[in-house]
Image (cartoon, rainbow, N blue to C red; front, side, top):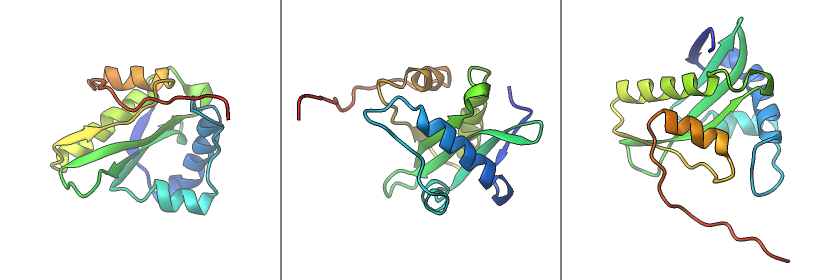
Length: 145
């Protein structure tokens, strides 16, 4: 478990970006993924109403974001959740998720949703621990090009 989970501030950005670079590289996705350049990452990833950093010994080892979901002022979507590889499976992502849920509830949001790929079993497991229920979604079909 992290020492603390705090709202991600400017002083956390460089370390959170390092988490993004490490986490995106090994995300289970349909194709290869890599982190956007820092300025694009700040503009796109940190543009939502809230982002949180998991700190261990004062260092950012994970972060998670909340993003608007369309024009509905009562709903948010979990954006990116990432933890440095050496800190995974220790409760950091769950602590970040709990902070997101508590913040959204305190702000009066009525619903949080998440879109997690079928192949991302660790994140699906983490969302289940937080009480999320899976619903059928899009199906990815691959074939010869």
